[in-house]
Image: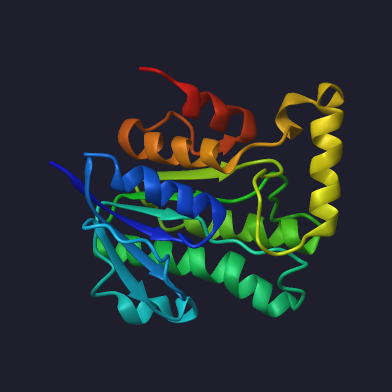
Length: 218
């Protein structure tokens, strides 16, 4: 029976690619998008809910489906205020996981980041680690946490440090260990879709394994 998917972060690069893949996949009959702004894509399968994601719990009644994909994330450059950063990168995914548990949704797939560590002295890594910890604490049967390395692709906003990092990684990629190599957003989207259909024997999925899952043929 075709599934109903929920995507948080569909206006972003990875989430947008995931949305395209889900609407073209006959395994999914509906894709609910919860976001602040419209994805500006028209398709019979897409059901948009334009909301304040900081108040996701208010929309519990509409938050019904079979699998939730959380592609929410910001950056230090885009969100320099640490309190707001944490509300986005920690607050939204954890609120979504709690709604999954309350509404009986047994699949939750979330994009985190390499270096996530609740014990880290780095604020941004610590926030990701806390998010992972509290998502797992919900006890959702099929939870998958993806930890990609630097994500490739073109974005509208300027991120000079990230841009320079990508130039280095692409120019001197042969010197970079596999787990640190750039990963494309399409690869992450493909892996997320496959995880929702095939599952995996691990909960925390590193960048190398994301690529393996995305490229799997069976």
